[in-house]
Image (cartoon, rainbow, N blue to C red; front, side, top):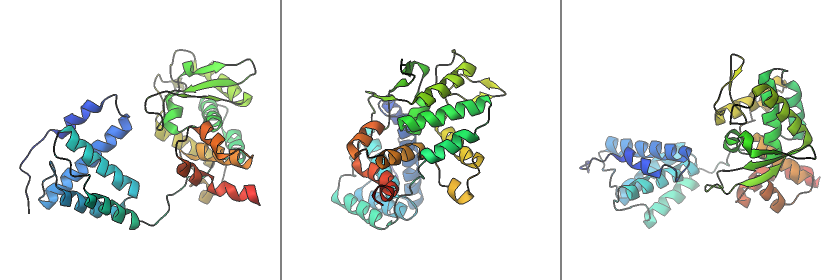
Length: 301
């Protein structure tokens, strides 16, 4: 059994990635490497540098309790820290590929799909929001997220300056950066007239001195910082409860539900896959396909 003979300040190496990767990605990498280093220490194995057998054992040991995508991300984190430390990289050996395939085949469950917040649910959610500053914000956020098919991170990153008021009563919105657009080329999307009216109501109360479009409210005052992505999830789940949906229905809504539901509605209305991909900024047909599965039955019956 090998023991570790090297000590590296590996956490500081990740600071070199500032600005090149999303903060959420960097946090995941740090946590994944920490898990790997601790696992190696518990097994009496050398983590940095690791050999192929150690990485394979780690991946196969992680597989039973994790989604294949999480196991793969941990492999990427191990690869990244070896490269940052300029150590021999063990992660491209064929045995690594075999270990990944074994991990994937051991987990034959389908990815859990968020329930789509379709137009039918959106109407109920908006109607159930209270006539308070929090309710005005939540109505605007739900309606805008649905219109733009946004991810949570895209929604909370929006700034007031990203909106342009159009003569036809709608808004033109610049979505500057997303998961599928790491270099910030952005995409343009448009809202309904109702969404614009809801945004106007929210901004009239919020005021003009906060750069982020959506912000927290504390003791009746708007705070000059953006909402967190988990808050978007909480708003959607609370809206489901406000609408008095059955618990077995409400529990399946998540932070992805706006994006899923809007895509399903577009398919039901006859839009093709290419148009839906453009509208939501998707790069992968496979990911979009999972979103649309439950809507396809309604199209063809």
